[in-house]
Image 1 (cartoon, helix red, strand yellow):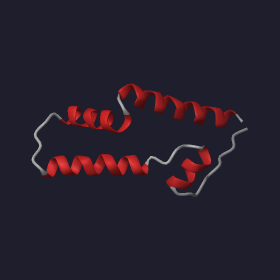
Image 2 (tube, rainbow, N blue to C red; image 1 turned 120 degrees about the horizontal axis):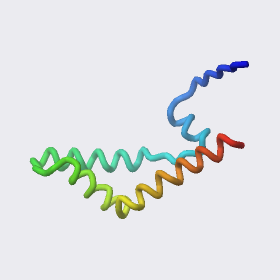
Image 3 (cartoon, rainbow, N blue to C red; image 1 turned 60 degrees about the horizontal axis):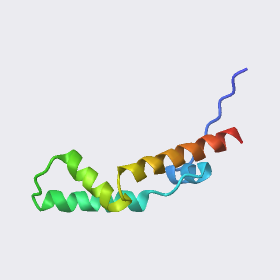
Image 4 (cartoon, rainbow, N blue to C red; image 1 turned 90 degrees about the vertical axis):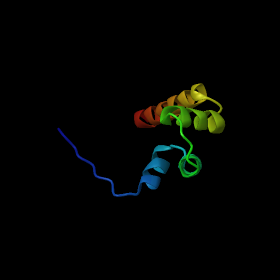
Length: 81
């Protein structure tokens, strides 16, 4: 038997239903910083620029990886319930 379920909701509503955090403030801060760097003519490797911003905002790539692992674990746990 095959069952298809369709949800009509916004991305915010889906994130909330899945128990995922609202990362919009972080995205806004990163994009604002990126725009400021580009507008000021900041010449640097894009990967290094992003890495530097994540270090500043999240305390390092290791914390980002832990954060993403917790999101994945929360999503997997909710699916099993």
